[in-house]
Image (cartoon, rainbow, N blue to C red; front, side, top):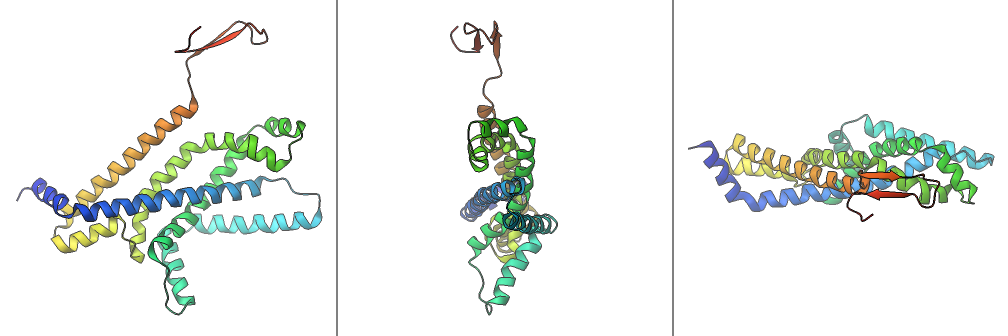
Length: 255
């Protein structure tokens, strides 16, 4: 039988299973990326906050920085598959064999793994912001938290958006490791279909194409979003910027 006919038969016969696998993969990767971003923002802000003059607060800050540094090094230095096994079965070991619900467990594992990478991405984004931004915020009476929230973080988010998009795409692919604990994402579904159809190569060929479609589509959507945030690059500065009569004409706007 023709290879392409066999592939099409798998798609037609097992498409409900494939759609469920795609949905689970996108759910876990999206939620995990968003939670990981929140973790990254919190840890990034803490690590870049100046030390307080108060000795007790300074000591607590250093301890917290140390804990965050250990978290980042451990979760960046070990494979997600191993993390999944340790967290899932470690919880069962400490609770008399009772395991975590699979979907929350999958989201938790992806979230804390992503958070370790996001922490460094956010920290780098904050460091890249010119110190004059902080000084300007302080000069109008803002505290450090206010300066971070209203001045720095909005700029950081814009700068790190490509990295966030990249992490999301990586998570779409890396959710496949969650099959080791039984999460029914796309790769796990492929194993089930293979066992039912006895067509290994054809099944994984279908799944390979589906992963590519997901990552390609997400990449294009996020790149379009990045371009919108960047704004128009076609403008002409007319006259002196210090002259009230000077104008900046953007392409498409009436002069």
